[in-house]
Length: 441
Image 1 (cartoon, rainbow, N blue to C red):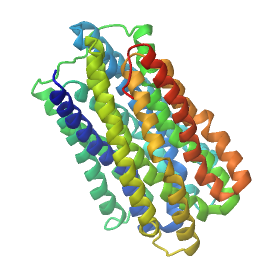
Image 2 (cartoon, rainbow, N blue to C red):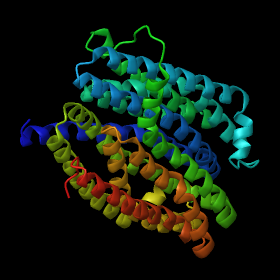
Image 3 (cartoon, rainbow, N blue to C red):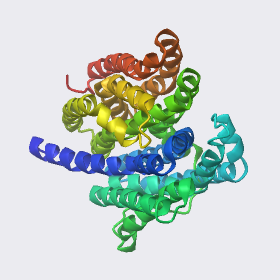
């Protein structure tokens, strides 16, 4: 494939996935905006306490979808249709197993989870409601993510993007309808979010109804090796999403002790905007995954190198634009979610936005590099990057820097962690270059 064709394919896949991921991340951002307008600071606090569970559900779906679709693309490029279909069947089986677990948690343990996450009397009932409903909709979230990943790898990135965008737009519209005209409160917000993946799957359905799909369920007993391969390849996607939830739990705990519910509400503004920013980088990473996996199956190393180079350049340009927008617009961004005009919330969120998002280029580099390793059957370096930035460094940094610099230390924990992980990632990248399966400098 020529250089121009490679660039056009990158632009097609990456741009479509960035738009789709921005739309997908608006599930929670729309909730944040409408809850802040309709239910005030307590509603925003309740939502922020419950969001980590959504991250676990969404991350599990991405782990299964990305892991399965990566192997599907590799096997399909090698003309091994039976193995490709077996990976799809295994992915669906895994999604069903995870769905049973999440639904059981929603039915029997939502109150305990709300208490565990730190909900006090003023926000407990709203947090419990949000948790229970989001867990009961887990089967839809899981299956939607699996189908989105496989359809994208089946040569239909436009349909995948359309499904993500339509699902998210429906969430925004239904959020407003359920919270304001219908006066359904926090239940309305989470019900709108739960309906979105069902609408997304409806948009995907013509791919199957018109028999355009090249993957099918087959009668087979899921092999342990295939299940393990899916989970190993998808683990970085899970860690990327779940770490957001784990970090939010830890940060909420720290901030409750430093600044109370107002501090948690300020962090809610930052964390939810962070979901959108990370989604843009994830969109680039997911966009290059089908290209790299297919090229890896064909042993086309030049095309892999060119694709990753385009991704890194795009990420750096996007990072400059994002941080400029956050730095100069921090006060206005905080004000959008501060419907009660709380001066302390406004000041805290404005300062936090400017510090927290200095992480942009480092986070983008780490997300794309982890996807490169995943897409080329290098699960361990991808897992190392994801675990370091998701758990092993961010949590100690949060507690250490908050002890030294209080609330400012909390805001700095994320950029410091991403910088350190990027340094490790650069070492792994250079090692890959020496192995002649390299990324360009």
